[in-house]
Length: 427
Image 1 (cartoon, one colour):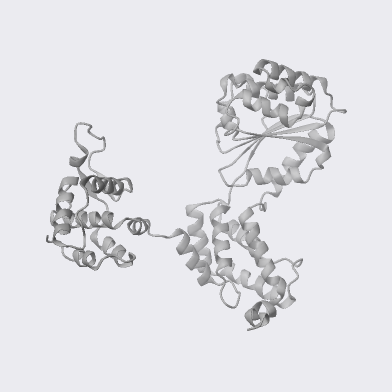
Image 2 (spheres, one colour):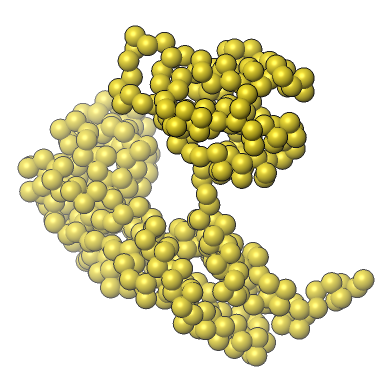
C-alpha cells in the first residue's frame, strides 16, 4: 500500500492538520498557555515596569491554590520584558531551606562573586553585609533592575528570625538599587506568618488568583484549548468544520454535565488538560472529536473503581486471602476476624487442592499485612494495642464477595480451582 493510501484522511484534510493536533497536545503537556488572567497580568506588568523603567523598588505576593497558574502568570510577564532591562533571581523555599543557602544563591545569580570569589563562600554575616553594601552602592538611574522571585514564599517565613526577608524588604523600602520582590505561595494566611518588623516593610501588594469556579469558565477554557486558529495551514473547510464541531460540543448537555463533575473534583487545569490530551490521542477514524470520545476518556481517567483496581493488583496469594476473608465474613455475619482465623481457612483450601502449595506462614503474614495497608480490611481498634500480637489483632472486611468475584473474572490467568472456590463458602 502506498503512503497516500495509508493516510487518506490526513491527505484530504490537509497535511498540516495532523501538525495542528500535535501542537495542541504539546501545549497541553507544557501547560504554558495563560488564559483568563488578563487583568492580573496587566497589574503585574505595571508593578514590575515601575522597577525596570523608573527605578522604583516594590514588593508583591501572588496567592492562589496549587496549579492555578501563579508561575505561568509571572513567566508570561517576565518574557514580555526586555532581557537587558533586568536581572532575574530565582529562589525556591524547597531548595533554599535556610537564609545562608538563599543568600549564597542570590550572590551567585547576581554574579557578585566575580568581584571577590571569597564572599560566596564566607559566613552568613559577611555575605549579608556584602549584599546590602552592594545595594546601597547602587542608584535608580545607573543600576540594573533586579527582579527577585521567591517561590514557596511561606517556607521562607519559617527561617530563623526571618533575617533575609527583613533585609530584602528593608532594601525595597530604602529605595536604593531598583529591586522588585515577588513571592509565590498557596497559603492564604502567609501575611500572618511574617514577623511584625518584616510586615511593616512589606508593600502589601497582594494578588489573588482564583481558578475557574463556574462551568462557563471551564467551558471557555475547553474551547480555548481546542479551537484551531487561522494561522494553522489547514484547508478552510476543514478549519470551519473542526471549530464548528467544538462549538457544538460546548453546547451539548452531556459535555456540560461532564464539566460540572470535573469542576467538583478539581478546579485547576491539570485534569482538563489531561482529558483533552487523551481525547485528541484517541480521535475517531474521521478525525472529529465526539461526545462519546470525551465521555469514555473521562470515565477511564477519573471514574475508575479504585477497589477493583486494588483487587486486580493483588497477587494470587493475596486474592486467596481476600476470598477467605469474604467467606468468613458471610458465614459469621460480618463478625471481626484475625489472621489466625483466615490462615486456618486458607490452609484447609490449599491442602485440599494439589495445584496450590501451602506457603510459608511468614509469607502469608506479609500478604495479610499488605491487604491491611491497602485498606481492603480495616482494624476494629482505632488505637493499636501493643500488647496484642499482630496475628490476633481484629479486623473487619471493607468489601463484599461480589466485588471479589468481579475482580477474579477479570484477573489474568487465575487458576480455575480458585474461581470454583469463590462460589463455595463451605470449607
